[in-house]
Length: 82
Image 1 (cartoon, one colour):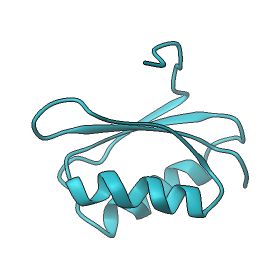
Image 2: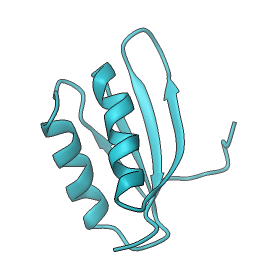
Image 3: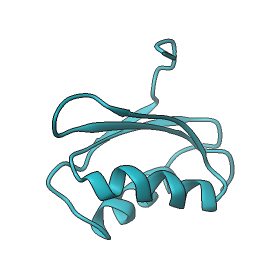
Image 4: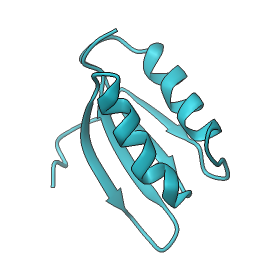
């Protein structure tokens, strides 16, 4: 576990479904500086797969995808490029 990673920003997109989950995540990442890390909390299983894939497609680094309980996932993503 990479517990030493402290996110610079956290967003909670629980209750949202695609495509709103990705739109919210993408906008949040766009607001960050390169090198910063965002923690995304979500409860939509599809998004736990689609957001990391989309972020990598856009050149960002997925540090962690973790199911934390029966309904929720945490994603950690580092902004690698504008």
